[in-house]
Image (cartoon, rainbow, N blue to C red; front, side, top):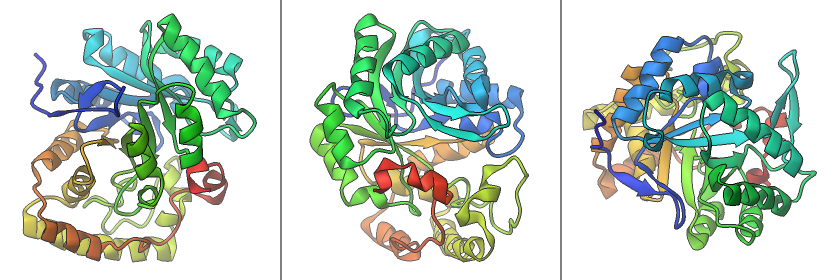
Length: 336
């Protein structure tokens, strides 16, 4: 029996109603080291049982593994219970090397065909290019997805990690339900221009990286190394002196969390929730216990004084190191 105690938010002015927090499935396919498939499926079930609704995946996560996992997990559930958010366009070579992005109309139609088969569904609820393809005008990409909306294979169009100008161009072609973009105490770049434009255009925000890949939590304290398959091992914020400096900030935040009687992760999620009902945190939980911890953030009540203390503990620009390695940063339209 589904528990719908989580409040809902509508994604933008045209998107679907989703739970106040959502589940991100990427980490269930090896991005942060080995994961247990049985526990992953149980975590997806727990998220749906709590009323989260939105499950985010990508066709290139684990080179198809993630969609297959999600598909199996939702197979025995009513289709309308799950809002499937799917990213496409990331290309990976057989040796695991990154090959860039492809959002040509013919390519995305092909990608969607494979996604529908792996997920075991006849439509996806939100379909989005993972990044802006510099070789393809955003109007062409959005126009092609709009045709898939008309054909019934897609319900809503989303975007990921694009800047304000691209948002305007895309929204002129078809309504955009949401922008998926990193937003956390450690990554506040959207506040200057992107978030105001989203609000002007009626575009919701699905915020990933809310815990800065586990950095804004109690689990990272004292950590100095990562599994070779864990991409944090190659990310600037988790390297040497950067990691040391960032963990000092997290230590200060942890003290505030302790005063509130909550975990550091709950305080970090609570801060993002406090930024507006149009912002839905996407939590990359891989276990039921981590999902339960995230749910606890919904009960965190932050006063103006609490928020001021949190933002003083982790000031804008205070994090050491970029959120991705240089090559990946260069692929972000949102950072230009």
